Length: 296
Image 1 (cartoon, one colour):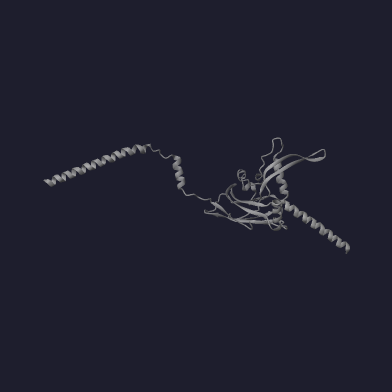
Image 2: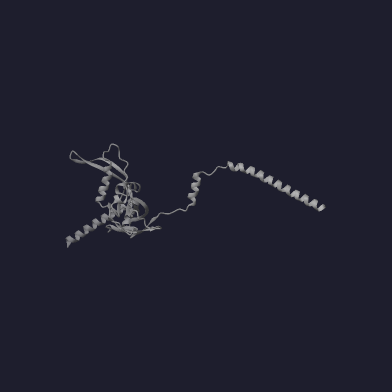
């Protein structure tokens, strides 16, 4: 009897402990549920951002792998121009698209600087300067080579965005309202520099093989300006740019020309004294040579 009483008391205490534990659990749930209902639900934008962040980033379908015959042009005393061979390939991680053929544009531009353009008119039999416009930025050298006519390779919208054509490469926004035909000043810069072989558009000069390999040659004149020549390669399909690659060609004076150029800019006083001494020595040497010729 005593054992049964002890067992009954233990079972009652156990059920009482379970009852108190369940009451504490219910009370905790009652406290948590209101707090969870007050927490803000994630918005659609946050959900979309989470999905975008979780997706792996995909690279461009086509990339340019470029090669240059030389990435540095040395200007010496007998420098009469240079030809740079530009070649490359298209790297893909997918099959070649079959909708539009691949076209290639190669644009090489020299250092840009403002240019003052003046208009001359004949008044009373004398040509005088009348109006002047400061062209904000004009490259010292600009050459564009394309695999097809530029109007077919690049749309006008993409040309405005990437500034590929010669006209787009020049910025002129400083003309006064009183100046008539302000656009003609920028056209004058293009005309003059085109006559000097500094600006050129070379259509159908980029060879493209199997929509993968391309090559062209850019002729650079003798009177080049020192600096970094920006070289851009643009791949287009249907007039739209699908890939772009950019590098620089370094054009510098070397040797004695570099030394004299640096001295004229950094130490003009010494450069003037040296020029004067060279002129005196040359004059004295020529006089001595003529005296010897007369005696003989």
